[in-house]
Image 1: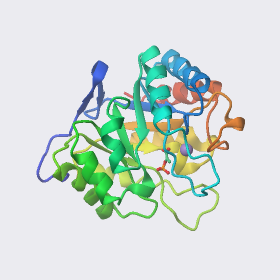
Image 2: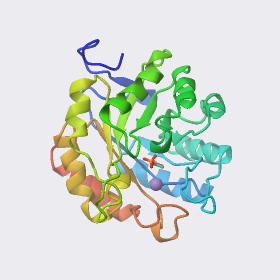
Image 3: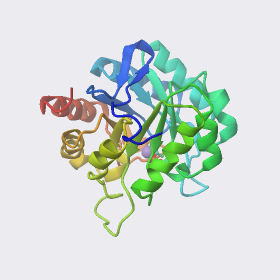
Amino acid sequence: LVSRKTRKEDTVILLPGDVVVGGGASLMVAGPCSVESEKQTRAVAAALQKAGVRVMRGGAFKPRTSPYDFQGLGMDGLRILREAADEYGLLTISEIVDPAHIEPSLDYVDIIQIGARNMQNFELLKAAGEVNKPVLLKRGLAATMEEFLHAAEYIMSRGNTQVMLIERGIRTYEKWTRNTLDISAVPILKQESHLPVLVDVTHSTGRKDILVPCAKAALAAGADGIMVEVHPDPATALSDAAQQLNFDEFNTFFDEVKASGLYR
Ligand code: PEP
Ligand code: MN
């Protein structure tokens, strides 16, 4: 079902408010790593609306490496995200980690995110496949293209055709970036599959100084969208403090990406 062989045309996903993913239009998804408070989330929503962003991300269920790190606000986080987004006319995307939370999340998210660590959580994939809600599937930390596409197939085989793929970097021996951004994944996925393909420049690189060239490279390679993390005061963030952009940095980033002519 995911294969280009079964469907020649690009899948275009229509979100509320006439926001489209795929089919030639570029999508910017931005927002904090984690929903931390109403104040923080509303501040981000206001800044994104001003910048012309339509889709806000924000993690409520955080899959953290250490159990002692901030785990997210859970369902309260989803509610805070929804309220802030509604106030500023934005759409929401948030990671769901438990199959039992798929149904309850439907009132709060416009796009269900499945995280890298859960790319092969097959029960979660099946649950996401049972609902009528777009799903953004992140590439696993060490997933091959084949495994990634099979994971998408799990969702589609349950009936949900609204699937987007996102390259978020893979684990290699390289230490100067958090992960290795696999740009070649973009044209391969576009060639092998008809699904929209996005690139998460924040988690792939883990460094703010190379986000612009990486976003341009992603778009030049055919990506349908970019994900980037934005926080009112990154230094105090409860997760991913080192890699989130503040509002000025985000505005500069987005302006430069748009000025490249690659963002359509
Ligand atoms: C995220 O986008 O919030 C996240 C945890 O990313 P990943 O699953 O790609 O690590
Ligand atoms: Mn993060």
